Amino acid sequence: MSILSDMGTIIHTMTVGEVDFSSVRAFRSNAAWYVFGPLTAIGAVLVLYIYKLVPWLDRHLERSIVVYTYIVIAGIIFVGVLQRFIPFLPAQPPWSTTLPPMLFMIMAWFGCSFNVRLRTHLSFSEFRTQFSPKWQMVMLWMDAILWFVFCVIVVTTTARVTANAVSNFMIVPGTNGLMQWWFIITVPLAFILMAGRVLENLIEDVQKYRRGAPLIEQAVIGGDV
Picture (cartoon, rainbow, N blue to C red):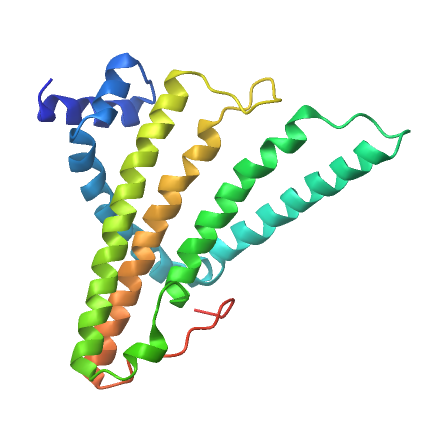
């Protein structure tokens, strides 16, 4: 199949939500890069626009997902421990050891998105503060490009995994109908949010450079945007 035909198959699959063998084959082809690369860029712009339109989401979306997901994980594990060691409680459900890793995946990648905004991932601030403003800006541009390429790679590859999970009707072990793709699809969504954060940071850096304001500041884990 040609790349254009595969691209059309991928777009049609995402539109109608039906995955078959030809769809999975299209997702595995190089056409996926031509679909999800621009999709990641468009998603980043939309995310940035939504954050500007609704500032509450800018400040609280990812970390709210992280906090509530962590609470659910902790609750499942806590109850599971009690059920394992206290005889008169009901037996530990089989999904209590398989669902938390799925939730942890959500917590980890949405948390990564928020910390990209806070610049707590590989910022090298102590080292880069010794550079001139021009070279600091070069480094920040390099960061933005590398983060965006990373986002495109993850969005594309996890979209393939999602399509495969849908086509094979993969369920979370220990459950009777909880589909794995319901959790896996959150990964490309998290990285589209991350691409939006990368764009948000880059716009902020360009504005600071034009004003002559300091570009590199000490990052604080758990800080505010």
